[in-house]
Length: 279
Ligand SMILES: Cc1cc2nc3c(=O)[nH]c(=O)nc-3n(C[C@H](O)[C@H](O)[C@H](O)COP(=O)(O)O)c2cc1C
Image 1: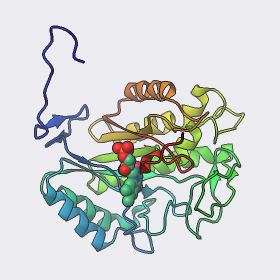
Image 2: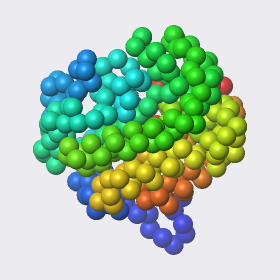
Image 3: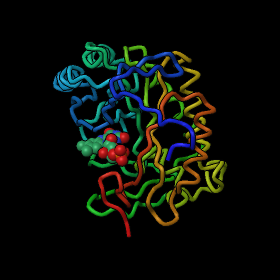
Image 4: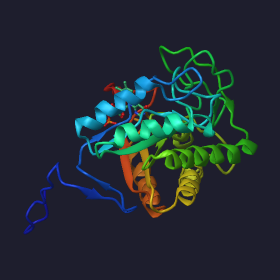
């Protein structure tokens, strides 16, 4: 209900939206990430993927968010995910960005680490916040090892490197994937995260990794690049991340100067994002 004495504000879907970074979306239609699994074996974006984004660009959406791109070739969600950890595929990544943005759409690359839901036979050493296998039906997931404290700095650098490369190659910015039970969402979860160091336990500790990465990425890509985060409103799991904590995280992300927050929900144990909700 709109507040009394104030006319409801209508916003035309076709109207442009200028974000805090200065990037203007030509309209309010966004394509959310859909893991295309159209990378080459070596992790480069394929020509098929590039052609797909040309078609989506012609479709007229103002914002195109790519399917999740891996920040580490040793850990991917699914086979044939694109991987971006150094400049070896720089030209193909640039072609991908240009294909989507040629007709005016804003291209944003979603960057992700699967953590303990690394699907596929080549994920040999999955990591999670804790050494806990997810109770996920239908996937043969290995038991992860707890991410050593010494590896956190490397993880942060990897998110930064992928973000820098995406922007250098021509993407307007990046979306950090912190939803759906992947690594950053696992750290946020009181169920998946049983750590006793400064990255586990209290809400402030569980969100530390996400907030550090977002701050690092903003510092690296600068204030003029688009920075988005995808966050669960809730894990839809008893004892998981709930709405209250999610709202606190959203406010903390705002303080870090993100441009867009995409709100989703669920994870592989409670896959609300595919329409399945626990009783
Ligand atoms: C085929 C397919 C692939 C998807 N891949 C991704 C992905 O790579 N990254 C992501 O954040 N979400 C992915 N999603 C989830 C959607 O972006 C979206 O979050 C989901 O459909 C639920 O909608 P909601 O988030 O608006 O509730 C995928 C969905 C589908 C159908």
